Length: 589
Image (cartoon, rainbow, N blue to C red):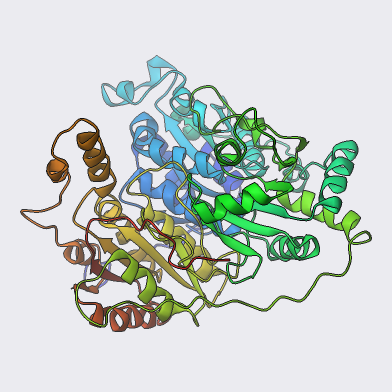
């Protein structure tokens, strides 16, 4: 302990595993997880000891979190950059119940996370009075089974090694998702009589993505080769730069217009002339016109394909041929409807976009004329005013102006953010929505992404644009960023309201002939107005705000970016009115 009372780590000597938890810790290390995000708990106290005093708190290093949901969110954000899972640990049934929203977000986002849980002794004679009885749950995995790819409760340390190997493999295989391994305290504390013989970890890699069936691939090739006005719906894709380049090449070869989804990570450059815009669930008149005129639609694992296509080609009406590239059906369940409506398609290619695009390119490059050359298109949107209140559209315009020549990573954007508002030219430029709509996840997902970018030594500046509701629910996650020195800029789009619900209440009141002016009741964060900057400072992160005049916004954002470049996290609180942007920031041709 130093003169300030700070604890110092006592060096440890690692050697042969002596306990079940030592062997389990070694199994976690062999997966290559650099970190394990956790909120501590007695149910995995033996594993915690092994992580610290057997592994030396290295590979994985513990990322201490103030809430289990933050632990899952940080792991989710890290995986959204890395395309591979990170480990998180949660305490027994109580910690798992806290973590369920984060796990559901990762599930809907199709992001790999390996969650380690624990339970008191299954053998009732070994339970400590009271506490280990309430921390015992028969079939604990049942709490999350409907939104995880797989779960297990191994009965021995050796079985736990296999469970962790399977959990990592299945989480990684696409469509990716969270997995859960529940460890009995008895298994963790067991003294090992001998080390089990184990196969080498290299023999347990995730299986390769499947190849598309030849007959269906050939049908898709014929449709695209003859199309004059094809459109590509760029959906769930990896963060691979090679996959990104291949999608651009295919679009240029076909002369295909490209559409992206606001809920998904960026998958095509928004500055490319073939890019026609971002959309949410409802197509704008401009995008609807493009799709109606299309004579072929290639869906690359689009989010809610039926919801989009049915707006264009209603049931019973003529339809352009629809080619669907997706193997998402492999994990569809009956508990939740995150799989969306059943799309009517003409060709199914049951694989991932990267594999399908490569096979289409191989066939089409010999049949199609050389593509034309395209010039980069820049966004040009100036704020309408130089001073005065800041609208949400003003925030988007100023943010674009300040960052247009800086490599940034948007880890999140708030609800109501205008479409076509950001120049996205790299797989890490925008990481999409949280997946399951869990308010409070934005702060922790941003930390995980920033941690991954720091470890990659990326020059990209991570920025989380979060709503005030998202920030207030998840603000204690900031302590983990402060404690680990993770540089990240939070820009709070602060309208002092749970505005999504305020908007719904206004609509309901109007439909019922009642005063929509009362929609604010039970929605506004007023009397008193929360001091969000003080909430950040309480977690060890400084910042500035509230910014209320548009004249002050650009300098504040620039200062925040420079602070993050210098290696520190920072917060900028921006006051905006309760509103959504109804129109694109820029209407694309």
